[in-house]
Picture 1 (cartoon, rainbow, N blue to C red):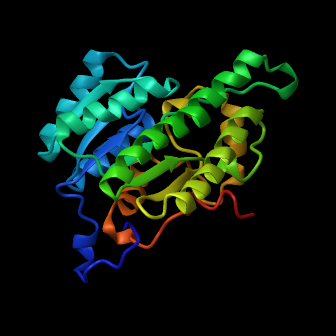
Picture 2: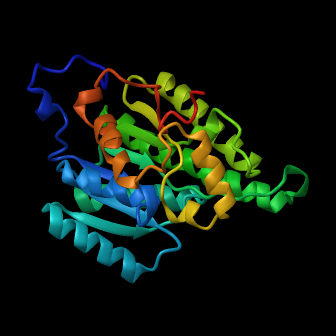
Length: 265
């Protein structure tokens, strides 16, 4: 049982992921790439999925991280919007690695469109990737974890789940991430006998997703963030390692907000 009381151990050993296998969706760039790196640095063997990144680049990233950490890293092309495809990918990971204990549902996209202008296709695509894809990933993981009696699911949500961003208009993205947080809470209760389920909700992170925005937007964000800077993606690694490890053994259904106090004022 995931929430059963663990044997007493040194605190640093509780953070070790040595011998565990993890899967990260959307792990070839941005936050996902840092999560892959962090889990590997903590000792886990890591599989990650990619969709738009090339196979050559993804395999090169896997080799680079494996060389630096001494663990096994493998890239898989997969589409989280396709329930059958992501389920088959997770099954392949189990077959290739011999185990799967941690799944990070991280793949996501963002658009900035006024609500009156969304087409049904644009709205649906956000939901298909950010919400449907997160659920399909978690559902596939849950079936594996139920059979083996233990497992750990971590969703990448967003501060956009708990506030309305300005000046950009991104209702669909915000709604999708709010749904992810509530979904995680529901799954944490429903699957408590065989899996822990938690969320990480980052604030403004210095990734490609933000670099394309107008400078005036960035200036307004900085004026609203008490920390007065963006978060470097590597600053999120510790949170994911914590949630993936025995250091958080009694934690499920939580949403860790990491935002430089952006949501507080």
